[in-house]
Image (cartoon, rainbow, N blue to C red; front, top):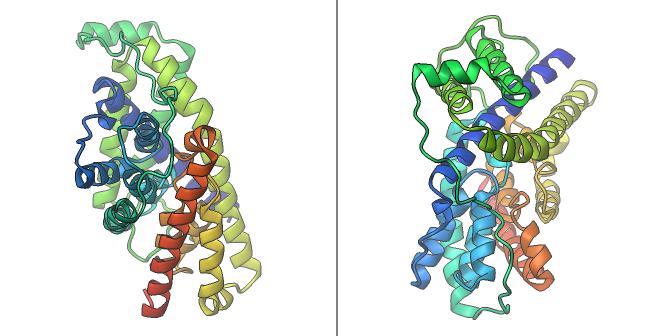
Length: 357
């Protein structure tokens, strides 16, 4: 059981880091344009803000808060963005079940648009926007064109910095784990792979496994391609130092807690007979402006102990740590966003509860 929890934790954390690194890479090479070009039309603001929320991690949420405080986005668009945003949990859900991630993102996207438009209809910007610092810093010299040839690859590998060496070694071990079946993935069975009792000794070459292998190989290309500034500032300082340990510990804690409880206590009957209580707990936990606590409900869903409606309700309310800059800029704004999203999550959670989905 312990080895299985460790294996799953390493697999999930590695996949999260891979996807975060790719998102960071595209954000920088696009000069931060992932969060720009929002039209002044109210509908288009809500629509594009919802799309921003679907970007895994904090980039879309930070962009929306920055644009709101600069009076570029209206309040309904901010609400829509926070509903659509799943924070770092989106990476974990993608690693556990890509198909579930697709359904969940489609659901929160639709809910976000409807909620954002209704908010704009009844609430006319209750906040006074204030100037804030840019939460996604892109330096003017970022990602200048660098020739990528055999000679440049050789030069990079012969002059490895400590950080680049550690990252490349870790990624190659992850790729080896995929090839040998240690990190094989299969979403069928709704969660048996999350806290299973048996370990894999062969590779299951499903669509997800192939996709994750391709992502890992592309990440290896990024690690060799980028310059030292990007590697140090964006990968090492931002992704590794700020996210890696927290995601690893929260994932390990959630998996270990669920595994221990299910091993020693027959909790399944209680969970299945008390969905309404768990729903209210999931909604309240969603208020926490931090990635991590919400992984409990992600893990419970993928272990087959919670219905999709509770995962959806928690996802509507929570936004990872995207709301932290808003909390720093406006306490009133933070409370209004969380209050409205809590009401929206409750509505859809209850609908799901009574419709048994």
